Amino acid sequence: MTEQITVLAGYRLNPGNISWEPFAALGEQMTYNRTANDQVLERAAGKADLLTNKTALTGDIFRQFDVMRYVHSLAAAYKTVDLEVARERGIVATNIPIYGTDSVAQHTTALMLDFTRGVGIHETERLSDQLDHWLLREAANGRADRKDARSDRPWPDRRRIRMDRLGDGHARGGARPLLAGRGEA
Image (cartoon, rainbow, N blue to C red; front, side, top):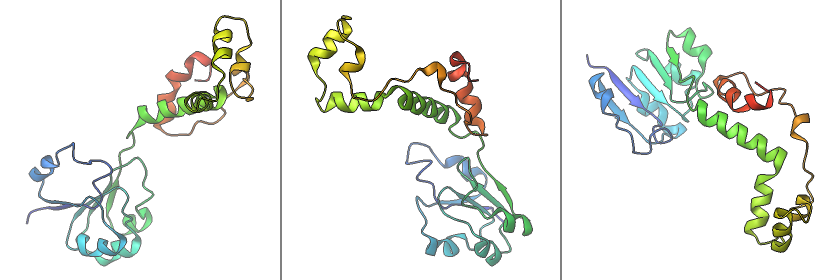
């Protein structure tokens, strides 16, 4: 009997730029971009292997099928998979633990810098033409204080800011080199 692999929610991971073709070597494969909750039972029926991203795989779904043996979350989290019931039923559940580590680390660092330096506020003001361009020029030439050329938001001393908690996952390790220059790693 040929393996039947069903991708219930493939669009988030692959909006069309990656081929699902390698799965063909593993068995008969069907890919759905999205699967609504009321479509899961129909699409999962008789399938041994399910791949999901946003589609929830609940205990009620697992209890409906005896043939299901493998579920894979196409993300770092398992929040869409009822792991307790999967374990009870002998269904192996896996995920991608390092999915997006570098992107998450870079985004975390960018947000931290935005929160402490107000880059986003500055850009919003610049784009909305609320900044006094003369004052910007004067500040650049050292004839005015730089805080006068931006919003009333204070400029915190970054040396006094500490990241006490940056998460427990792989992204924390990815952010470590980015923050090493601040003594935060």
